Image 1 (cartoon, rainbow, N blue to C red):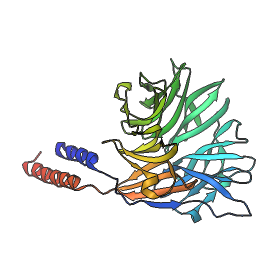
Image 2: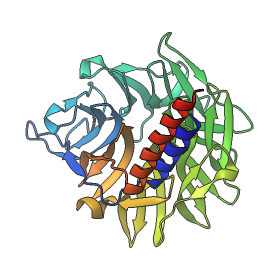
Image 3: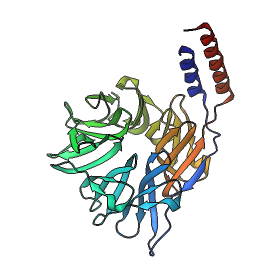
Image 4: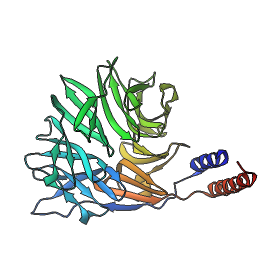
Length: 355
């Protein structure tokens, strides 16, 4: 196994993706009843599934939608008496996010199961506002405002209970992203800084870095956390590996602002502000390479979520201001193929020698 791990590492860092062929799919629903869908975004991905919101010219203004790869597959999941709704996570057949009666009103954590009539409020008892930003089959993660304090919160789907993952010395905390056994977000005690939750949510590690005036982590994959850190007045795309000392900036040269919003494997998405315009970005955090998606696709792209399934990469967000996805197949460079061949030969030789 020593050889295969080494070779996989080489493969991961050798992959270049500037020349990937991108397939762009708009998920903008067909207009109905004279109403125009004039905006939207994909904010959650699962195998063969997408979810998010679309903006409409009549109430509900922000409508929660789910798709299965095409605009025609879109399902409007808007319950009555809510004007602003959004899906932020998918787990199995369920979608999670929040609802609001008004744009500036309090939010309520919510669950759907693919249709408007399946809507259920998951607002914790005693909370004045709440939302779920990440979920798996057993738990949801996000935050809830209780006694005037925003607290990182976990929902237990099996028994319907919620528990606070907030602890001192911070006065407030918030979970902004979740994947696997780790959650990320921010903690506040006079200054907002990125944080990661581990050990079943019981351990909180502040990620700083020390020279940042503020920071937040938005995505996590394995031991890698991503987000943004403001240093010398500039928001910079940020990567951590579990500690404040591990901070690394992936801020593109020439950009006046950047941030990473999600990661899966070594691939991360976000944006950079270049020459006064927002540019959708995808980074390979293993080697620092990046692709400017607006240039690569010829569209205005603002990505927010990413998913890696085998060698299939899917990015969700806004395309030309509408909900959309980008897909591509990751093809290793020749150097990577050599590494794979070397790995296969080394493993074969090791098997001949025995364990």
